[in-house]
Length: 207
Image (cartoon, rainbow, N blue to C red):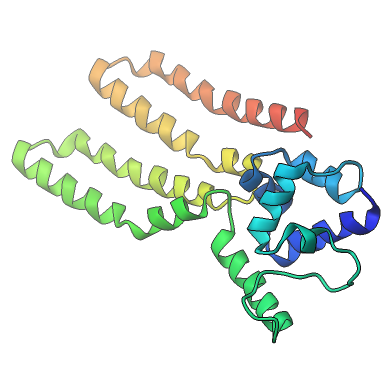
């Protein structure tokens, strides 16, 4: 691939509001592959060219057309293309921000914390188990940490934002109340640093 086409692919990606990680996720390939395209070190195959054209709302010919310096982005009318292109870029950033934007949006819309409060009060009154049923409140930060993680713009941040510490604390308390083995079960907390070490190690290995 020549440098002009490589620059064009980079411009199209940026003008449509995608990071390399998000675009790679949408195409089902690695971020390194996107980076190589944009450095003219390799070329996308036919399937990826078709997928890129479809994602940007243009034809493959337009995708590879280097005769014009203006980058074409998705719109329905030729008139006012620049204005509509900028608007789409802004909307793309708002709607496609994150690895799993739709999941994040649905999680934030669902009134999970209210459901938990209602559930806690109802179960406690019915079964008279106010303690240790309060542990279910720990699921609230777990729930919203997952929602926030889904808005991460790359896999590394996604894995770091996952609620591993909160989940371990919740599991520790539940098992400890059931078994009474508070001391032995404290070993569960070793999972937290091990998890983050694995995330960092494999992230660096894939760079």
